[in-house]
Amino acid sequence: MNTHRVTTRGTIPFPELASWSVDYQAVVASIDPSNPSCRQAFQDRLAQLWREAYLRHSPVVTELQIICEEGGTFILDWTGSILDEATIHDESIPDNRLVAAFGISHGKEGRRPATRIRGFPRGGLGIVFSELAQDFDRGHHLAHAAGGGVDINLYPQLASVNRGRDDDGKIFRAMEIYAASHAGTLVFSRPLYFGISDHPAAIDFGVLQTDGVLWQEVFRNVKTLEHLIALDKALTLVGRRLPYRGGRREGA
Image 1 (cartoon, rainbow, N blue to C red):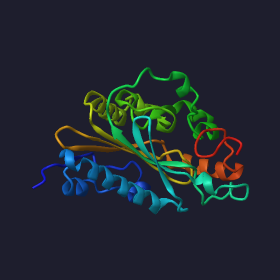
Image 2 (image 1 turned 180 degrees about the vertical axis):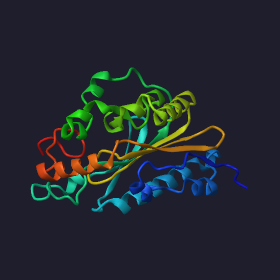
Image 3 (image 1 turned 180 degrees about the horizontal axis):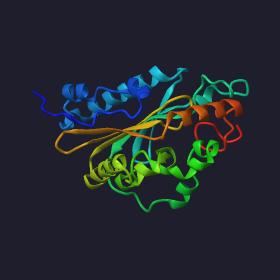
Image 4 (image 1 turned 90 degrees about the horizontal axis):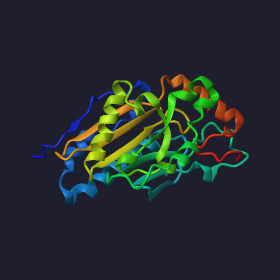
């Protein structure tokens, strides 16, 4: 019998995101992730479930792309391929968005590229709500200390979580530290969206521990969904011309 299991608080921060959930317990029960010969099958099954969950919530079906770089594998929804001057105001077309990021921790690769990180905007919420700008850090889906890079790996993350300031943050930091201190650990980060923007409402984060237990949690990434509703309205009004990196090129 497979004795491996999932440890989690079992909570999703917003009821509206409940349909994004993945039955990790069923995956672990069917594929033993601690068995090296099953590791690839385990990752493939997770990636399949993440894609299916994302497509259930995407109003437009696009071709998802897989990019392997910066210490991880990234599944992307590149909606920019179907945008033009006639559709930039279309509220049914979401931003270019990350579906999931996952990889094997392997330690830092050189110094943190501080200049490149500073050049990454903190997201559209800080533009629509200027008072929120300092609430977000330039977070990493896959931590730099565990071998994650920048660019595609960066996203606007609640500072309270990224810096371990609140209860969520303390758990998040403990998970990152575990992955960084145990080379060879499978780590994943899956954004959960509400609306069409590329700003995650929450982050589904997981670490496969050396004892075969999948440590999985969901962390809020906004204080209220009302902020994302307002961001969506701004995006459709200006035609995705907000000056922040997210799926639309600035001025496109």
